[in-house]
Amino acid sequence: MAYKKSTENSKKNVSQQTFKSKNKSSKSYSKKRYNTKSNESKTFGRKSDDEQASKKRRFNAADERPKRTYKRNDEYASKNRFADESKQQYKNYVRVSEPVDSRLRRQIKEAKAKSAKNAQTASMVEDSKVRLNKFIANSGVCSRREADTFIKAGVVSVNGVVITELGVKISPSDEVLFNGERLHGEKKVYIVMNKPKGFVTTVEDPHADKTVMTIIRNYCSERVYPVGRLDKNTTGVLLFTNDGDLTKVLTHPSYGKKKVYDVRLDKNLTKTDMTRLADGVQLDDGIAFFDEISYTDDNDKRKIGIEIHSGKNRIVRRMFEHLDYKVTKLDRVYFAGLTKSKLRRGECRFLAEKEISTLKMGAYE
Image 1 (cartoon, rainbow, N blue to C red):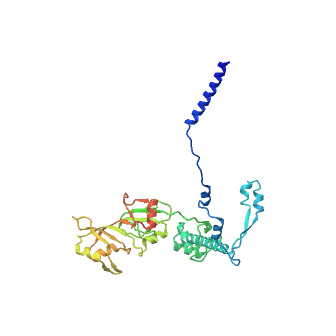
Image 2: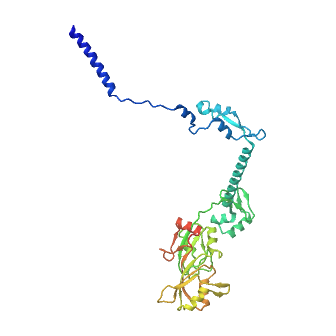
Image 3: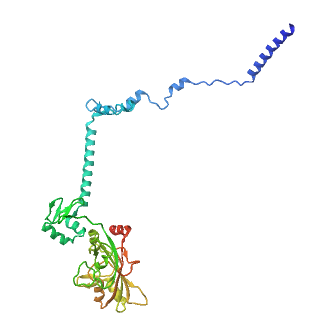
């Protein structure tokens, strides 16, 4: 019995000592304390209700803003009765009134936008309209002058109405009948030719043996015409198209498109005469001059290269003849950005889209 009793006491002592040793070895941490009074004094960026209320804009009773009023949109609610209620509660109400000033601003803004849209639409419609005689000519029936004659004769109708008045404009969507047959505007065609010698630059000439139209008919069925003129014995770049607007820009003297020629004379050109041609010579129809002139072959003073913007008839030949020179060969190598590169005499080719865009924009000079 003494043995057992001593054993139990010894176990209790060991466990107590072990527990105390653990407590002694563990670290003691001081509790963190917060000063609640100092925290209460801090606002952390928030303003009190009194301070916010003092900064709100206040209105007098006379100029107080009218409130927007809403009513329940039963029609919307009936159409969306299966929609989610959480989403519908913000959408099934419509505004029935709003402040007068904002309503007026909105109405003025909408009216301006509507008028601007209408003006733009009217401008686009007006720009797309063309004269009736031009539409007939572009259809390949006849020329514009002949179209005017047919219009006066009463053989042309637009949308079922016979037109006898000149200068009428139509839209591309209008139905045009010529002798009972509907006309369709032809697509625009652009062809460059390396004109050979001995061909007259004209559409029709009963006195001419050969015209440039005999060559161009082998390349297209559309009714095209030459842009500008080249003499019968002049060769080089010649443009054909049925685009009347582009033809006017390229041929009218006021636009002054650049042209480059290779010239061969019957005798050597002196530097004195070259200077006179660059400064200007007096012709019957006014003063004419070359923008640039130089020798193309230092060993042959008869070969000349010139640049000119004038579009007068036979201007190059007349200028040299004024100084007692005779032109034995005249070849146009450049016209409005076009050249005769890779084209033999009498050959033609259709212009690429890039070349057509350059012509229309005038980006070649």
